[in-house]
Length: 265
Image (cartoon, rainbow, N blue to C red):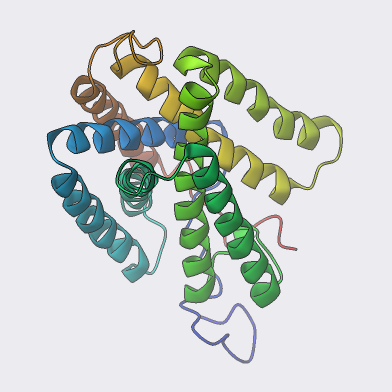
């Protein structure tokens, strides 16, 4: 389909089908749950074996993201499983950079922030928009998932930076990132902040917030002041909640976007 146009953009899969969900309260809830599960799963696997974590992270990303890229229409299961695959891989990438290569959290955070900025710049230069309501071509979808991957890695490093290097602990990091998340929401609601800017600011911040909540629940009190219920337990609880929430939106089509989107720029 060409959405009324006489030609199809190069690489477009369908100019009237948007393959990402509508953004609402439930979107942010599932996003937080997914980031927490990704953090706990990555840490749990790394504790068993760094090699195992790398294999699972890479395979999970390849399988889930490959499925998402192949389908032609939005599917809650394929989309959120791809986000989960990115979450696990992002945790592995950020932690691997620090643990395996000894890169300090502040340097890793700056590196991933630069990667996010570069992806957004290239995306804007090529497509002229960063709106998630315009993810209707293969090229835009690839830009989108590159941005998601980079923001997840950035969020993991930023969360570890505040919790450990800056000494806030996991509870302090939760308070910090929850407060920071209120800023783009307030800016969009009351101050006329561009909705695309507000969305991506909030999207970046949900990662360290969700990861900090996961770490606070799973890690021992001696490490960041956690509750110590274990990364494996947090993974299982998070996965159960993830399945329930995604099943709900998949059945009800609650988060399906109308064709064409709302905020193209």
